[in-house]
Structure formats: C-alpha cells, structure tokens
Amino acid sequence: MRGLNPRQIEAFRALILAGSVGSAANLLNISQPAVSRMIRDFQHHVGLVLFERRGTRLVPTSEALSLYAEVERTFVGLEHIAKTATELRTRRSGFLRVAALPALANGFLPRFAGRFAAERPRLDLVLSGLVSHAVLTAVVHGQCDLGFAEATFEHAAVRVELMPKAPYVAILPQGHRLARKARLRPRDFEGENFVSLGSAGLSRFRIDRLFTEHGVNRVLRIETPLSEMACALVASGVGVALCEPFTAHEYATRGIVVRPFEPRIEFEFAALYAAAQRTPLLAREFIDGFRAHVVEFLRKETRRPRS
Image 1 (spheres, rainbow, N blue to C red):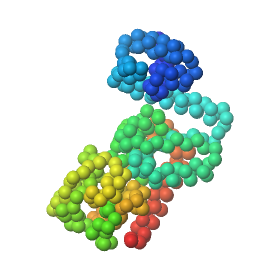
Image 2 (image 1 turned 45 degrees about the vertical axis):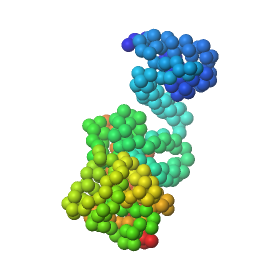
Image 3 (image 1 turned 90 degrees about the horizontal axis):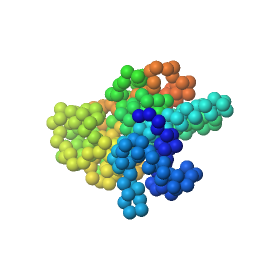
Image 4 (image 1 turned 60 degrees about the vertical axis):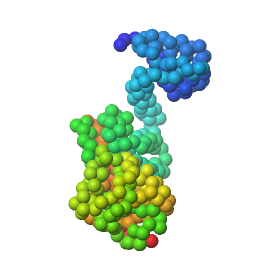
C-alpha cells in the first residue's frame, strides 16, 4: 500500500497507547480535532474499521490491534536507529538491549545487570523479560542485542552459546513433612499434590518421564508455564514442585523450603545473538560476566546448609 502518512500512523499509535482522543492529542501536542481527522483519514486509507465508538470511548477493533503490533515493531526499529545516532553523536560508551526468559528475569539476572551497569556509568541498558520463543524472535528481528532463552530454541539467523547447566530443586511449603529431609528423590513425592510446569516445555517432559520411570504417582492438580507462579502456588500450600534454582532462590524467604533433588534434572539455557554480525564488545562482556555469575551462584547453592 502506497502513500501512508507517517503522521496518521503516529496518531493511530498514540490513540492505541493513550486510550482516548484527548490523551492522544496531549501526547502528540496537537488538537483533538486534528487527531480525529488523522484517524479518520488513516482508516479510509487502509480500508479498515480500526475503532468502534462505545459511549464516549473509541475502542480498537481486532484489526486495529493486529495492525498496531506491526506498527510498534516499526517504531521500535526507528527508535533504535535514533538511539544509535545519538550514541554516535555524543560518543557515549555504549547501549545494550538484553532480553531474558522469566526464570532469569525475575530477579537473578537484573541483579547482575545492575552491577554491570554500575561499573559502566555511561552505559545505557534496556532489560526485558520475555518467554523463550519471544526472546528468540527479538534477537532475530534486531529488537535486542542479546537474549537468554531455553537452549532448545534454534534459528539460522541466531548464534546459540550454551550457559552453565543448573540442577532442578524440590520446593515445598514451609512446614511440609518432606522439609525434614536433606535431599529428596522421586519416591518421596508419591501421592503428593504436584504443581507442574507448562506441558509445552522440555523440562516438563523430563520431569514427567523421570517420575514415570520410577513408578511414582503424583496428584497433578495445577499447571503453570512460569516457575515464579509455581513457587507462589507452592508457598500458598497447594502442593509441591520441581523448579530451576534461580527462581527457587528468589522465593526461598517467601514461604517455600528448597531441597536438592536426585537424580539430577538439568535446566539448560543459552545466550542468543545475531549470527550475521560480530558480537558487540558489550554483549561479549555481559555474557562472560553473567556466565561467571551463574557459576559462582551454583557453587554457593551446592555448599549452602539447608535449614
């Protein structure tokens, strides 16, 4: 489609973000009639009904939301170009965008990233938490410089660098009968209410296969795709679970008890970056520093006395 007006697209984006014509006008620093006119002309140009009036509100249609997703990707790219130009013009020392799966983004990675940025006062850092397939997509489309995702994801445009493997741990509600044990095994979970990770993940497959091989019957009442939600559910007393150690550590003082689990089930994740270009120096420093941070964390967790 030819001749799209950038200002109309900007008004469309502003209306989606702001939720009303008045707020969109304030965001763009123009009049409300001007916003209404641009939205009307934009709808006519694309041949779609983008908003429906409900009382005094304009509500985006499903077509509008689909179109907005594409518009937002374009704006992110434009903002990155502008940001890079500013970096070059002002000779700032760096700009790094990092995306990570929730198991790392819910506390463990941000603490490392904070120290990384503190040691580089002129660094601009953008840190995002996304599910693994979205991390891969962000790296492929150049929306982030570096990603951390489950190691099972591959793409021709992305290099995958494996990070240290971390053993899953058992998590229990405080006061649970199994908390008396220093180490847990599959047979300990016989008949227990069990909070499962999402069925689409490799970790769920490995966990279920292990319990099946040992002939252990769990009560599979609740399922969640996120380890932090599993920890919160366990803290509520609804059941027990297996979890990667990063999230378990975050919740160790928030109502759960953490115990080593045997036989070992590995949580595998990797650093992802674009294959078509040389890895930026900042990204390489971040990967190497985070790898050392993971190794040190796992060493301490192995030696930590269990209460």
